[in-house]
Amino acid sequence: MAFTCTIPASPTLQQDDANVRITRWDFQPGAVTGWHTHGWPYFVIMLDEGTLRIHDGAAETDVPLARGQTYSRKAGVQHDVMNASPHPIAFVEIELKRPEAAAAIGLPEA
Amino acid sequence: MAFTCTIPASPTLQQDDANVRITRWDFQPGAVTGWHTHGWPYFVIMLDEGTLRIHDGAAETDVPLARGQTYSRKAGVQHDVMNASPHPIAFVEIELKRPEAAAAIGLPEA
Image (cartoon, rainbow over all chains, first blue to last red; front, side, top):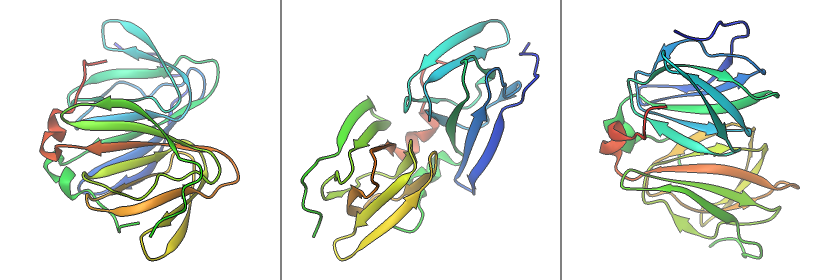
């Protein structure tokens, strides 16, 4: 169903309000998130080049990604994610809690 | 009004569809974006540690940011952005074109 979790990935919460949750995830080689379901649409932004091994409950897929490469997924995605790279990697995950609030996303103007 | 542009920042478009525009911006030291207005709410995700110098039309502000640090702004922000770090930096910019579509953001499930 998922990877055998020996080394857990390390989440660092950056923002968690009514509109968005922003988390930086750091993975040692072989580290995993553990099986989870995404409740909100989300983006992933790779801070490092690396390979994510995705377990979708039935099969594993290795996804090579470049530094800065960004992808988005709908709410409802279920999987386990492992760092299949020989080196540590990190990515930032942005979850849109209230998509209709996306227009209101905002902090003090820079 | 803005910085004197000697070295332009370098944009690399990753995705541009009805819902989102995702661009990686690379800056040499001193490089600038040029004066611009943000038409959509957006996120910036730093790929590198560095200092962004923001010119808001009246004053300049140096904003030190960590690798992976992420912030969001509302549509309508106007400024010029310079890499005030002594080294090259990059960040990813995610613009939400149709906030109400945020719920539909999605690509093929991983």
